[in-house]
Image (cartoon, rainbow, N blue to C red; front, side, top):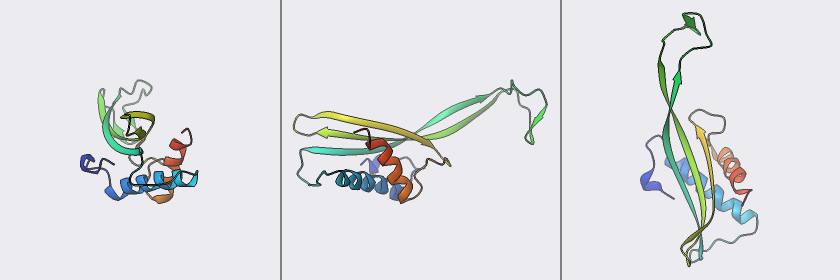
Length: 127
């Protein structure tokens, strides 16, 4: 897990929950956990700012939803990415990788243990 490189917006407890959810899911489908295994699971989380440009071209009124019309409104929306990779340590190759994203405040955001487990399960079901 990339705990040292976490963005400040991310809760480290949440990241640990994502790692535990991945481990429990893989145990549940029949895999065994061992410290000296030749296959490892890498869980990494990062963030990226998405620039959103709103030119209000669909609204003809100077006011919309109680804020003034601005011809060039630019917002940034933080997006969070979760990558889970399966690596073969002997050959130093990535065997499989899965990627998902969510926005802050989204219903898909893993804010608690059950939602973290659901996010990881939806990602690892393709493994």
